[in-house]
Amino acid sequence: MKTILSIDVQGIVSIGLEKVVKNINEKWIVESASNSSEVYLKLREEKEWDLIILAISFDGKSGFEVLQDIRCKLPDTPVLMFSTHKSIEFVRRSLKLGAYGYLTKDSNEAEITTAIKTVIEGGHYINENMRDELIFSPNSGNYTTLSEREFEVLIMIGRGYNTKEIADELHLSVNTVDTYRSRIKEKLNLTRDSHMIHYCFAAGLVKVNPHTK
Image (cartoon, rainbow, N blue to C red; front, top):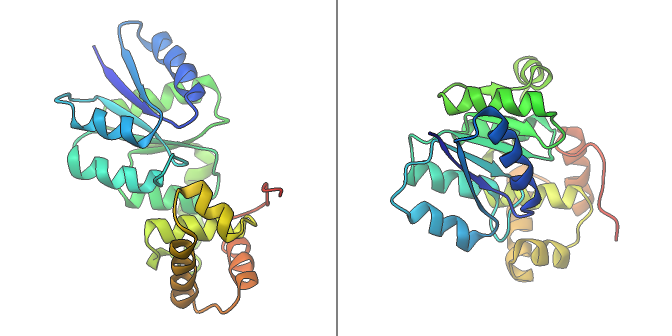
């Protein structure tokens, strides 16, 4: 019997994943955590998870930060990232931090099933299109020097969020966001917010701006 932990702030995804998992094997168990407090309570339990499915967008912390914490606490537990982000840089960053696989939330049931089966047995999974892009696309830009939180703030700036909106979304103070903004500019050798937005588009980190005010 396998036990899977689904970490997703929306909760709805966990319900859908549970149906997929039960179709794989009805004896497998899916537990869920939908906020930071629940996540760390689960991680403190004396339990060996066979698989953790982790959303990148998360309450109070970046999914990348949670991934790092999982790798520290449970280094042998396979983690499958589950995200709305299709930029290859999210895939590259996830793998760099120790994820075993990466799925987008528009994946069909067959692909989710394949990914879960592959990763839970210790393999790695990225869909074919992303795998080809990962292999053949250049690693443009020097955003890899950014911390996980700086990277997340950069993406939100690229999508058109202002400082207060970023602070509210990430549960940070406005001053803290401004500090991250300054560090990003310094590390990327940029001088204006508009330059950061253009940088995101040029590096393929943001393809469209879904944020409306």
